[in-house]
Image 1 (cartoon, helix red, strand yellow):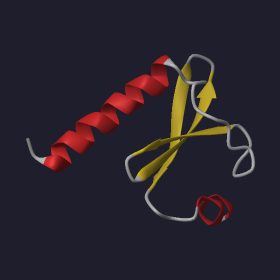
Image 2 (tube, one colour):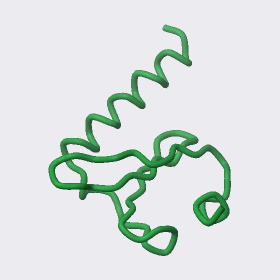
Image 3 (tube, one colour):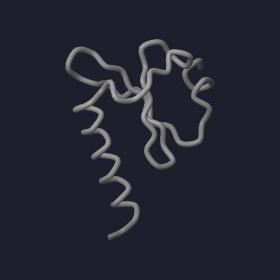
Length: 71
């Protein structure tokens, strides 16, 4: 299987995991209050939990999250 397709499929599996267990990953209030972060491969997924759903705010590679969220 193509590595890019496998990475994409595994990233989608991580999204499902976030939906099933949204509080499993740490809060990152020092970056933005109310956000949590999950790392998959070379990407950091920043999301919020609102009721029974998650809202993915950003998916960053090697960018500085503080610079991105303060911009």
